[in-house]
Length: 122
Image 1: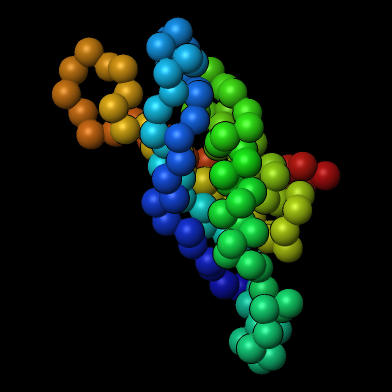
Image 2 (image 1 turned 120 degrees about the vertical axis):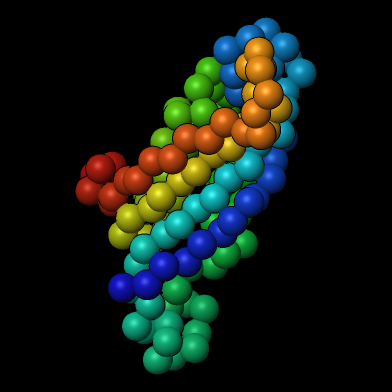
């Protein structure tokens, strides 16, 4: 078993509860940590035996840009579902961060993390 991570992917999307978030949008940061067997890739040194990082990036990009959610929890679930259904990944941990979240106070970012397994979407 191995882990492949794409860290701090950055996108612009329209997710949130407030009207300004839905209409003006904002920046979102996403991490995807995928667990899968890497034995064949290590032995063959061939891209067909692993996942293509660019394909994962485009999957996340489509989820962030094409969908609209009130909650980043739902966005994270959408990303996990699409990756698990379309790529040879056994499990995934997705982190979605919302910098500059509309919170009355000082904070760096709000983050949601969830872990999902291929069996969760069968």
